Image 1 (cartoon, helix red, strand yellow):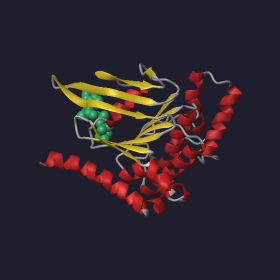
Image 2 (spheres, protein in one colour):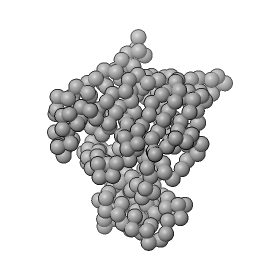
Image 3 (tube, protein in one colour):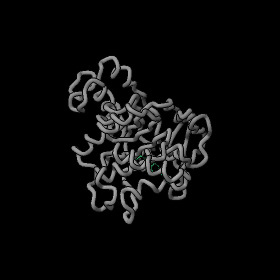
Length: 265
Ligand SMILES: Nc1ncnc2c1ncn2[C@@H]1O[C@H](COP(=O)(O)OP(=O)(O)OP(=O)(O)O)[C@@H](O)[C@H]1O
């Protein structure tokens, strides 16, 4: 089992000698092999939630469980991909991808097979010996994703993984993530500021409120995607043209807009 369950999670931080509430009573789950995107205004606590699932941050109240076990520390079944690719600049593509496998004590032959397979999956063949500075941003992010995938995690935690990419590379990466996800579905929690990206990729979208972060609404995309047969379209622009896509995007956009207006008033 590899579901993620947030139950009545709150988190306070101390700033300038005072406690402030960053997350308030967050309850939602990501089912096994489900892709859930989290959107919300800047500072509403999206990254804090993801870090809790990763075991890098902790609740003040409530609980976060993965696969039925309360998260107490990072674990190899949960891979994290951040916006900043965080590759080792002095290691090659292969060495970067190999890095996490060492701590898992995967036998050498199997490790090499897995590395090769992920290099192929991410379209990095021919770049095995290249260093990060010799790669474009999109390729560096593919290495970061390959480094996560090679661990064979059941849970992928992705924090704005395409945020630093140009629009075209981002589109290619979104299509690739969907393709790879269809071939080998995993439990994914995916943070993004881009509403279209959330609607295109996710089975459900969690919309959060401005600070303190609460759940404003959870939108089911999958039922509409399946009913309308979005999967028959390979290209993102064809899906984005569909009336059902536009409707969902507008619905989420309005919810986010409402949060901005709350601040302005
Ligand atoms: N370790 C910390 N100490 C103090 N405050 C923190 C800490 N981590 C997060 N915060 C605060 O908690 C709030 C939520 O931060 P978080 O990074 O989770 O938001 P976010 O929704 O991911 O923001 P963004 O979309 O801008 O990346 C912010 O006000 C942030 O300053």
